[in-house]
Image (cartoon, rainbow, N blue to C red; front, top):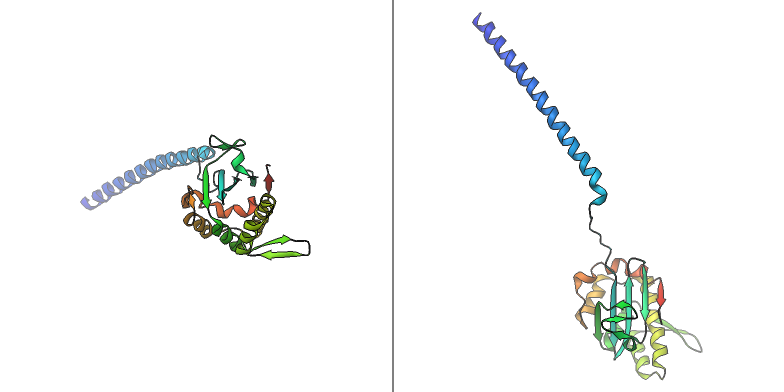
Length: 204
């Protein structure tokens, strides 16, 4: 009799325990489920991090000649202002902000041209490929600097649109010039520069 009574007490306690587990487990399930639903509903307002760089205006000076590049990552295009030194005013140029500057000598220009694989220039007789050193020689001896400079810049950009420009190439510019650019600023530029160089807008 005592054994049967103990068994009944045990079974009763077990039943109560199972009922409590089911009850509180159900409450916990519905609570968690409702929280998950709330998170899903709030998803559109979460500000996710984007790797797309911020637009940037870069004033590039070589041999006391300045060219301005506005890297528009939003609209995926490159705006260029030649002879920029004539239009700089209060940190802006024709309405574009100057966020960074790069100041260097012709050796940096020569290296950039070699990085992109050289550029082709048309002569009266044929289209010839020039290395970086040949281009700098051409610039320093030209009687029409502005015209040849514009052509060289546009040809170089065209080669970047074809071959791209890598992170280590930006690092080379930073390490071999006087500049406000840093690696964190232009870290993701390499992922987009090829595309934006395919759409060039000559402002002047």
